[in-house]
Length: 92
Image 1: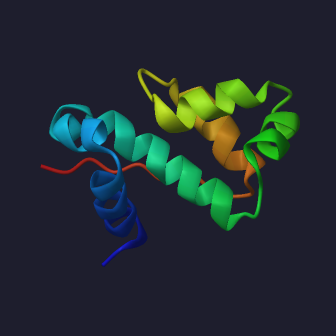
Image 2: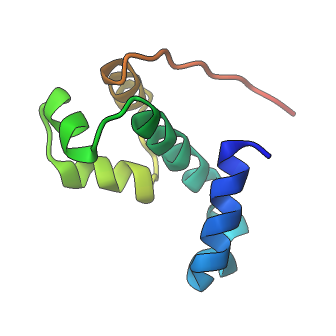
C-alpha cells in the first residue's frame, strides 16, 4: 500500500467527518496530502517551510489541509523550497 493510501485509510478511521466527505473533497485533499508527505520526508516542520518561503505557518497549514485553487506558481515555490521538482501528468 502506498504511503498516501495508508495515510487516507488511517485518517478515515480516525476522523468521521473526513471519511463522510472524502470522495467529494478527494482531489483537493490529495494535493495537500502529497505536499505534506513531501515536507515530512524532507524533515521539515510547517514552521521551517514557512520560513524558507518567507510566509507564515498558517499558510502552509492551509495549503496542506484545505487545498483549494492553489496556483501552480505556489506549488512550484513550495516544492522548490523542499528541494524537489514538481511533475504533473494528465490521465484519463
